[in-house]
Length: 356
Image 1 (cartoon, rainbow, N blue to C red):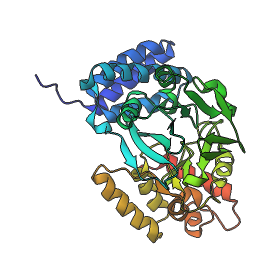
Image 2: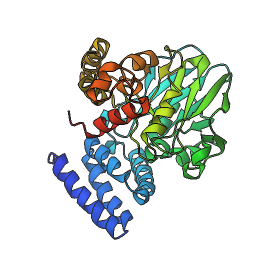
Image 3: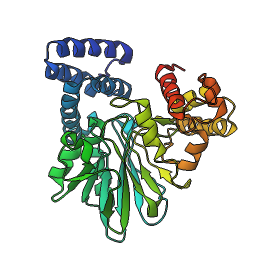
Image 4: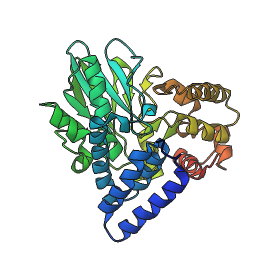
């Protein structure tokens, strides 16, 4: 017998009230168990995304949301019918050079996990594994065994698969931010601003990029022309300021501006289409942006990914990287003498309240 169609909005409203009720009385685990069943069996990516966003607002709920992700992953492994075809199969992302192969692995509702393979050494790394099953499937498909997990920050949708992968692959090391080591599950190697990390024949340079979280870091592989900014920089966007302020985030983004324009930006979420709607709102006279939005809308209509993007395109069209532009300044009521970090703050605030 066919299951009735799910009213996502109605279901989310009920789930939200359940979460709030049990959070208020500290029984967060009960709330997650209740909501977990609804999300899993409804198989709704929209509901899952909204629920995960709600969880991110509570420290206690963040910890239990990791458990939610792990339980759901285990059930999907045992019962494939519970998986969602919309989450897609792992897809090959065009490598910047032959120095490193990069594979895109869709996870959760809009996350991208990245597999890195350095062919000379045969080493493989996993960037920000939100959940383990799609990662292990992609690794198995290619015959790769990971030696490393690389984390950019502590959020559960970037670290939820850490411990399961560490358990599955003997000797796997977890690499992450020194400034947030206490919140990175299973961390072995701690890195910070100015450090380098060796990945076979390739060297990654590390930047501290706080703002989204206080301990966020970004990895840049110069010889592979590849940047992994986690949730600091998105295609046409930047991360929300959960644990930092605008000056901090602008300082972080400014570290990435001098990198080569042909650098590929492997961000962690498929947010590009919604980011584009805001970008043309605040920068309506940018012809390059308008053309890019058209291409993005066409790609998403075919369910095609828009990540990675070129850093050069971000420098030309991403409003969060362009506070010096006169048109953007006019849109947020800033004059020529307004500091860039203040313009950035106004752009970020405008995005936070944008409903377009």
